[in-house]
Length: 256
Ligand code: NAP
Image (cartoon, rainbow, N blue to C red; front, side):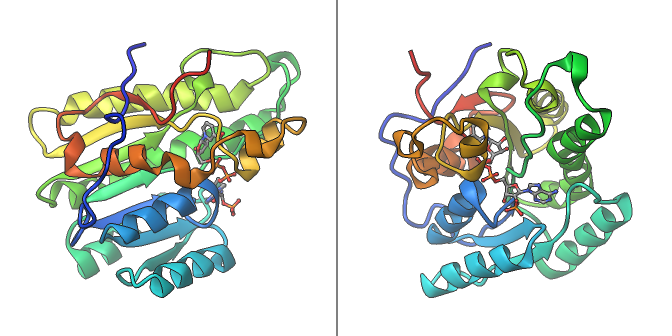
């Protein structure tokens, strides 16, 4: 698979996202929290979607303390999200903002790490629901708002195991492969008729709760912090990447 990267030493303009409204899923912790703060720091009104009010409130407060535009909080559990909830959300956002300039699908769960042979069907369904189905549903409901923006960027989050299969990564890996497929199909559908771009990003090994759960024996500080990979997240959400759609990005150079 051909992969892309942000320009080396990419330096986003301080007002890169001024006046933009961007929704981030899984915004209460890890990479999603860092992206929400980075987007707000570059001028965006960020809509913080997650399942826990306490962590979303904390990010809201951080944005306010840093002098960023007032954020929005959307408390939703992607494991149980319904079509009706999505439609209601789109209607509410349409009424308040009229359009959406960016959508970062970041929330995911790791699920169990075991062979397909003994994988639990319940766990499989949960991982596919959160990592894939919820992203499809949200995108479909929010597409009219994205199309109402002058230019919009949708980012889906992939993984190294969503590009090359690896033993014991089960539903997580499969959900990320499917995410890459969704990006390609959607980007191709929108390419010539819409100002909505769609790309994927593989953050690479990053020091978050998910990484620490996946690699308990690893020294956490050997990996970059979420803040360190934000240049790629800023590049992809803003107009500097306007030439890209349907592409798979790496936020870090592949490890040898
Ligand atoms: P993380 O720290 O575990 O964060 C995942 C986020 O998703 C959390 O905010 C979590 O909310 C949210 N989430 C999980 N289930 C949800 C649900 N049912 N409804 C709503 N939100 C839910 O992981 P991360 O490392 O930041 O991962 C961010 C993205 O990068 C994921 O797509 C992951 O697959 C990908 N990724 C990460 C790495 C890495 O090394 N960190 C590598 C490759 C890919 P709670 O705080 O409530 O749990």
